[in-house]
Image 1 (cartoon, rainbow, N blue to C red):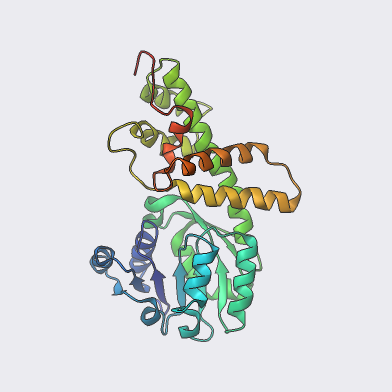
Image 2: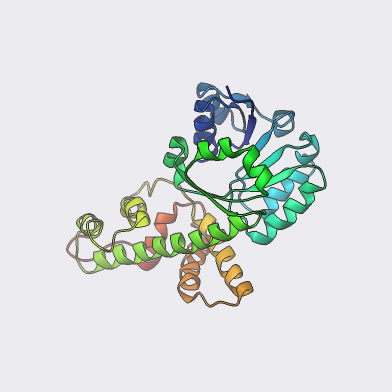
Length: 302
């Protein structure tokens, strides 16, 4: 069994499969969540479970965080119940979220004052790949820290990419990744909406597109759920609209800071913002199709 003890804070859609996969690699894994249902799933997966992070991080070598944004990251680490002061000297925060370069650089400096390293390792690939240890993991961290915890990173990754020797570089590559993801989802929604309005069977259209040059991971992954967006139940929520509101905001802010025009990304961002303004924040991001076609096909296949 590995000597590393890992605490995963949050056993949600990504946290639980990552924690389970790490446990399957013989790490000692602790899971933290406030929901008893998630803790029960953690127990079934063989995790040591806790309902407070303060207790769970004591003595841990690595604390894996999946947070929504910079404000939440700051609160988890340095807030009233912040965990940074309870972590042992020499431990590391493994941050898998997309929060932006500046946020990570600031956080890394604050943690360094407490003797804690930050591994900037945002991930891409979704819950299924997380459970398989097949994520894209883009890492920015000091080389000695990467070496110390390489076994943890490799257990998570199908493709481990070390993009820089300091925190922030992982976020930079993830920002580029999210530009493409956000644009691809928005474009897929427009394409399938147009197909419906032209009287085409949207499922047949999706199948045809996925067999040709227009195929993409996002079209294949989100396409089926886009068609479910018009059902009474709606699309199963696997990745929320408000996540891409945040991520595309990070993309356009980064582009502005770099002095580069990203008009396609900016247009996609406006679609997510429209969805957010219509009360769709908690809906699956595949529901973006309803921005182009609010009520679904009106042609022969309506």
